[in-house]
Length: 332
Picture 1 (cartoon, rainbow, N blue to C red):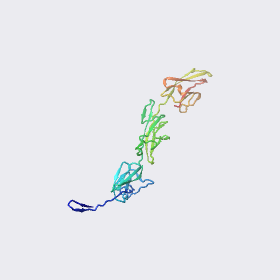
Picture 2: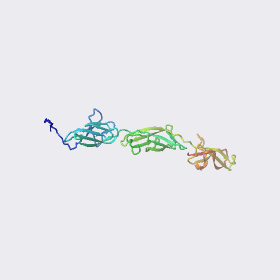
Picture 3: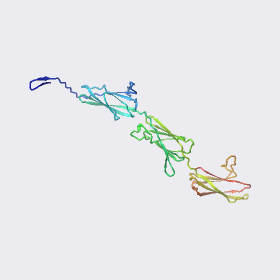
Picture 4: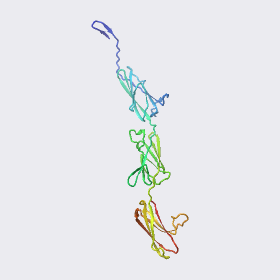
């Protein structure tokens, strides 16, 4: 280029103009390192060798080329809301999952091109299992942190946490919940009801094992001591005879009055009259002779000192002195 001013002075300069209409070609290589001194290994696309929070992933773009000019900028987007610049960068992925890593290169003419690489990050973090329990009492109240025999205990593992639950609740679809109730029974699910049919001096060790989709497990255990349900207090309040000094061969009517305290019955009961002994007696006492058994429906006797139920039978008197026993056998 030649420039002449108004006085005729002339100046010359050489200017090189480069015409670059083509985009650069981005090239990405990925190495995985477990530490600063580790030389690393190539990223395994068939089976990820990247663990969350541990491995350093090195991204190298220095093999990217531009046929007409030179690459002047390298921009990285790691797909987890983190970015970086430079031809060689490193990144630690804090969460598991598939991340689309994008490299964008720009040449001196302002042309740019991008390349995407998917990095699969392994989940190596175990869930944090947690649960609570409660039962509903007779008045409909919820009693937390307690259990009662014969009443459903509600177990809830909704307090369990896992990194896979960041965008979702830790439901049965995300995690697997396995229960061992310590009484020979088990179950599955984030919530479950279980009935302890008896009490135990040592309690029941309830174990919850939570497993995530990657097979990571964690378990937690609590000792549950179910309270004892009130028992029906069923008893014979009186025993009357139509004649307590009968003659041999005379028919005697026996009338037993039954009462119930404590709680209503959940099943029927039996009343058996015995002569000269009873299985209810301890030691070497005789079992006696069963005279008659009457099956009573549970609805026939209502709890309360003011309520009663009469059970009658007859006996043909024999000579001698005899003792009559009445055994009330209630299952519940």
